[in-house]
Length: 236
Image (cartoon, rainbow, N blue to C red; front, side, top):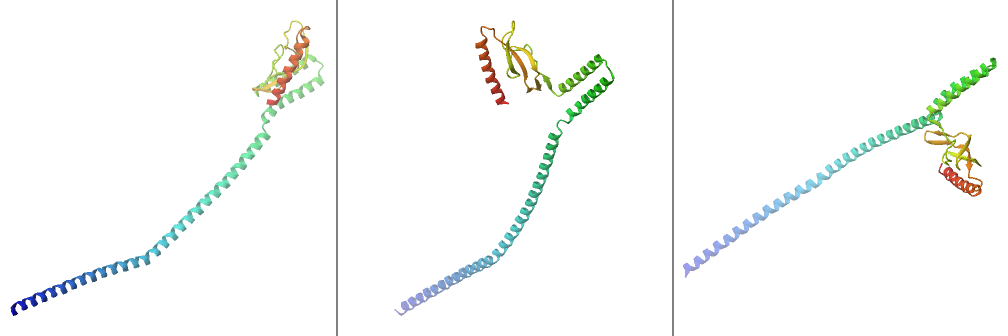
């Protein structure tokens, strides 16, 4: 019996020792984990203290960089505005001078006609030969027509043409035997084109219908002509 009790006590002692050893081991492991956790917490604290300082410095540098870029862009913009204003003033001056002296070439060419007329008048005062005077005036007239033609001025041919409201202006309508109605039978004032634009309508006298149809035809013609001229002038 004594031997059994001793063995039992010995086993209990061994189990207690094992439990205490395991408890010590667990305590050591817990302590190690606590130390590791505390170390990580210290690292986090140190990082949290240093990181804001670095971030603020970077933000300041970025702000300074953006301010410099903004200043540079503002300077470029102001220079472009000044250049554009100078360009606009230069163009306005060029346009003003262009319209101011647009007829310079035409006037210079017409001065030669003025010189010819002056010479013709001086020649007329000293000469009684009318044929020479007429010939000189004809030469001046031809020269003047040539200058106008060079600038795109062209006479509107109206005589014996059918009346056209786009080119003619009817002053009077008279009957004429053997001539179709609404035909130009006389030019009172010549009309002219500048390139493809009518700058002056030809003032004309137009033939009317025969006596039997005169009243009806003349009224119809006058109504149509009046309407067409009114519409044409409105467009212009």
